[in-house]
Length: 193
Image (cartoon, rainbow, N blue to C red; front, top):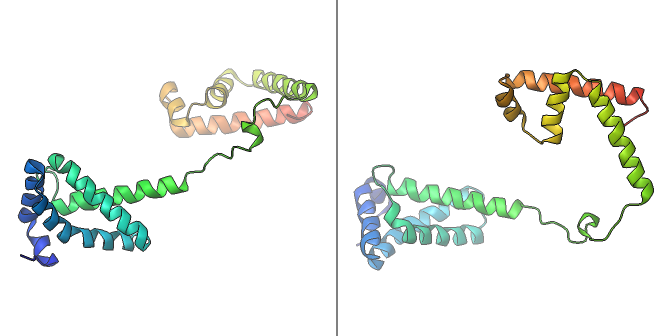
């Protein structure tokens, strides 16, 4: 029995029944029917979302495999089968794009090469800069100095600082901006960073 797509859309209970059969008994016939109904639509959706043909085909196979393995967690009270399947497809596509966009570290980057020692001059220059910076921070009002320490030495996000200090986020950002301007003036006055 071949069901046309328009019938499949309006026949949500049929799709839900197929998923229930897959969940209950790993019913291959039910999966084949569900695959025949949904896989072409999933692939079409992925193509419209910008996937090339190969990626769309691969992701469609992956999505349908997830449906097979996760049929037991499908809850028809929370979503229709098509909503569930297309959500899986959307998430798989996003995961793939994130993996492809992630930058691989260059093993030849000097930062990753062990044994590169700094020259004594470099160590002295770094120590002098740190001393000037700490002196400049000490000249700030106490509240601004604390915000600088939290944001740049403790690497706390502005939202975390606002929450911890019970301040509006805009206030935290304004005070940090003022503190940085004062630091710049002191550092320029004292001979640079």
